[in-house]
Length: 67
Image (cartoon, rainbow, N blue to C red; front, side, top):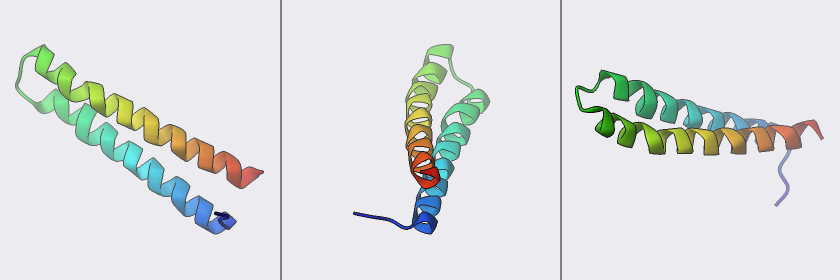
């Protein structure tokens, strides 16, 4: 499926916003939870993965825009 430049920009922004949401919801929020360190790591671990995953998708789509 071919997308226009404007559509690719919107898709890249969407995935960037998801990455920021995982960062704020999973990583920053875990510092405000009163819990043992292991529980904080269990909360932050998947958040780091998903943040990285969606950020990489955003960069990939952004790269396609410049080509």
